[in-house]
Length: 227
Image (cartoon, rainbow, N blue to C red; front, side, top):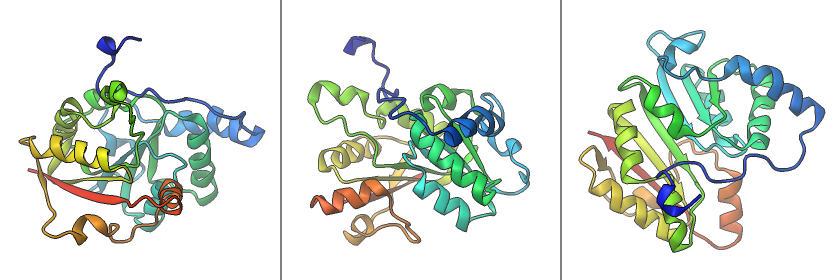
């Protein structure tokens, strides 16, 4: 695929790693289809308890540690998690089944294919945590956060909804700030340095964050409000 044909924000990472164990493969074959988001339908209507509930979206949940922790604590919130990497999806599915987390639905393909099919103002919060930074200059068009992606997110987020972005890559933090600050749809909520240096309240951490800290990189936690 040439750079000219790459779609901004599209998924370009691996879709599968090591071979799944038999139990994981069974979950992917059986549980995944049962809780997969239906494109074109209102997200809240796809849960057992849709009435008057907030719906939070996590794009690229990795191994699912953060999403599972949030779903566990906030049983009154509906969660949609997007992750094309099948091994990460299998890990989350195992937790969903074991803990009976009926407030989670998933999407195992490219989120940029799902978002355009969803209705306006359907999310109360969106997480993008430690996405692939694509550090080489020629790869930066592959970064998830782009002017185009922010336009799509703005449409599906309610006024006042939060967009939370975390990364340990300074260049990506600057990249995201540049694009959100020039967007008419988002307002950076920070008023002091601690607002982006300290993790979010109730933050359970992720394995990517733990690795970054071990290797001496300092994470940043950005919060933007949909205006």
